[in-house]
Length: 230
Image (cartoon, rainbow, N blue to C red; front, side, top):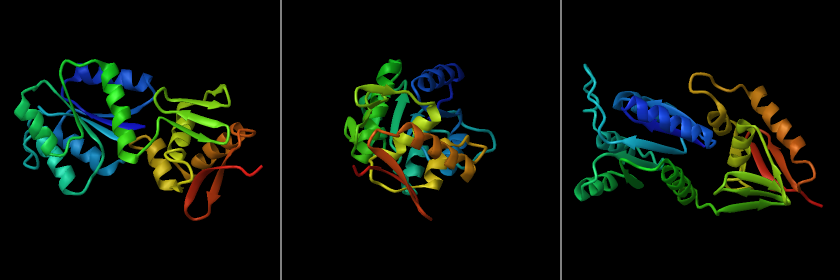
């Protein structure tokens, strides 16, 4: 999953980014409302971690630096990406304001990084209506632990191949466009070429051999994961 972390505290952002990356997430970071708004507009994310108390930027009249205004602007343009607010503010009225602005969940600082990960998993499951486990043939994805199994044997994949399979299993049987998969895999400043995506798919097909699950190409559309006929 790809996460946008908008947090002005450089130390906290570094610690959180490292922890989330170690947990298997891809993390983009921003320390101001303006930078966060730009990333949010041009890149697709699975969830946003948003600090409310963002600094005002010199010469910027687009946003006053407040995370609530950034969130309201995103919801006003129809963006439904799940948002978890992280803030030192813990008064009830401010929690209510965040939720009324369109936040999906709320954590006051200081917080435990394990709880952040748990809430992220819950948010993304709720947003797309996912179960804790998805099974296709003998292939099983445990969403809680972010682990894949073929039968009882764990299937260990490189991070980017795992992200491709995660997307194809969210849920399975759903056509996923090349554009969406490329956005999930690309670095922010470097789009993934079609032949690179095809190489990921080719490697995954080989690794799924014998699992009862296969990746089908839908010409002009993208790919889907489905149970193979026996």
